[in-house]
Image 1 (cartoon, rainbow, N blue to C red):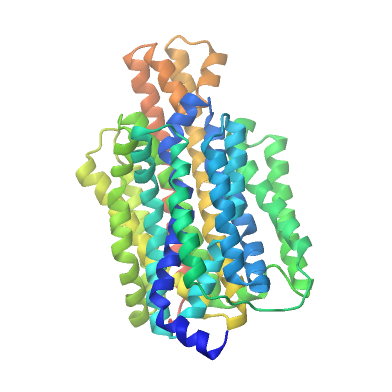
Image 2 (cartoon, one colour):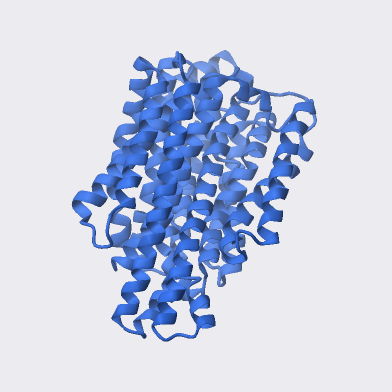
Amino acid sequence: MTMTSLVHTAKRRWQILGVLCLSVFMVVVDNTIVNVALPSFARDLGSSNSGLQWIVDGYSLPFAGLLLVGGGLADRLGRKPVMQFGLVAFISTSVWAAFATSTGELIAARAAMGVSAAFIFPATLAILTNVFTDPSERAKAIGVWSATSGASVAFGPIVGGLLLQHYWYGSVFLVNLPIGLVTLLLGMRLLPNSSAHTGKRFDLSGLLVSAVGLTALVFSIIEGPSWGWSSWKTISGLALSLVLLIGFAFLELRTEAPLLDVRVFRIRRFSAGAISVSVGFFCLFGFIFLVTEYFQLIRGYSALSAGVHTLPFAITTAIVTPIGAIVALKLGARWVVSGGLVLFALGLTVMAVSPIDVPYWWTIVGSMALMAAGLGLVTAPSTEGVMSSLAPEQVGAGAAVSNTTREVGGTLGVAVLGSVFASSFSTKAASALTAGGLPPKAAASASDSVAVALGVAKHLGSSTVASVSNAFMDGLHVACFTAAGVALVGAVVLAGLLKGQHIE
């Protein structure tokens, strides 16, 4: 950019931040807006538990797998044009998803949306880092960006619930049209362009190996409960993913222009930031996936009511995230980030010991507030740590890595916690249905879906409904305990990695 354009950009930097946050809101909302529609998908499309996980992860898996590609292309071709291309593609694929008529078609459309999002998200953070050159001001801007991202996750179910109250399930995707068009038009006028020309060949081999390895990992985890965790398919899939991801690391060390320069993980602040964001979103996405089903299927809330009941999470995240950025500037990220993960674990533990009829206003709101406050303390300092530890020409790749760990963490959160839940629920629900008089084979088939299992139980009597509902709560408890354990381990690891590290 010329000196004149740099001055012009500096004057409108907060307007630019608004456009970037609008883009982030649209992309991140689609991670969770489908959660309140899961019962509708199960009812209208006949989706199983595994199918529902793929409707959610069908978006976040290609999103995560191609963020490095999106960041790399943005560095080479220009961050503004790549982001604008992503917005056009996102709008188009949202229309496809809205009118999908089968589980398979919806998963395919969601995957196409995830590919499009991968060209939007890293560009937003790279542009932000280039526009806000003052470290203190940049930390605050990243705090706003992170608050938008975190709050969007919780606002997704509210927006989705409001639409489902009046329209069919496809409407949750059509909401992207007005947001996307406004963002596209504002971006054309306000966004500056920047790039980091390298003149080196694009790392196609790294793209293929990382994408196949990550897909094999998530696919094996999601299908594990139905295949059996000790089956040759599950073990083979996990082994293949491990070999490919290790191979990817070695490949990148030998490549002249790697898709991901794995050497940056030697920087402690970079590694700590990437790990903490991954752990935070692992817990968040997994919890949101399960709690929206709990609100609708167990407590009987409508889609809108279920979304509204997640509002305390969104409000707390929006308030605490900018505060976390400011506090970390003064105290350093070590205790802020580690303390955030401990708070998240505490909130999950509250849910893990709560009975089926737990009071909403005290226990559930309190647990969500703890989790949201924890996430708010984690995201902004961690993202700032990643971005500020890199050279200017690395910001595109750094943004891609930060966002990749966020999406990989969220994708694995749904896959792992969803599978932990499914393994517990399916076994106990099948036993309950069999005890209620259903043939074992039919009971096993019905227990593949919470909605189907509860629907069948209603025909077998109130005691069977209670048993299936308790099976759901047992699965939810195990999943929450698992997530709390991951958060606590993350807190300990990060306290060590961030020892003596401060955001400058």
